[in-house]
Amino acid sequence: MTELAKKRPEFRNINAFKDLTTYRLPPAGWVSILHRASGVIMFLLLPFIIWMFDTSLSSEISFGKFKSAFNAGLGFVPGWFIKLVALALIWAYLHHFIAGMRHLWMDVSHDAVNKDFGKTSAIFTLVVSIALALVLGAKLFGLY
Image (spheres, one colour):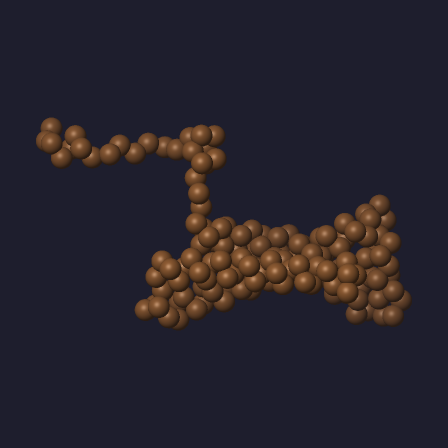
């Protein structure tokens, strides 16, 4: 065995309980994970989106039921919960769209992509998607 083989570090599998709690994910990693999570949320809430679209456009009576579902609830589901689901859908769409635009920009401008750009664009994506979701959530819950 040579000297070089003795000095090389030994990598083992990580322990999920010990290592994952101390690992600090960079902002670009958070954006990547949340981009996937927002896609899953939009896919899983597709029946809710279709219900909202159908109910809001079918007739004036169905639009009245649509509005009352957000105010009074629908069956055993309270109205605030339906608003929270709609807010999750709003955030998922906004985050997925902004993160997708970030990825498209990085694909178009290969020369401008570096570690600093990745960090600043990831922070921009997180801040803008959360801020827009809060503004639209305030409108959804009737704060303005």
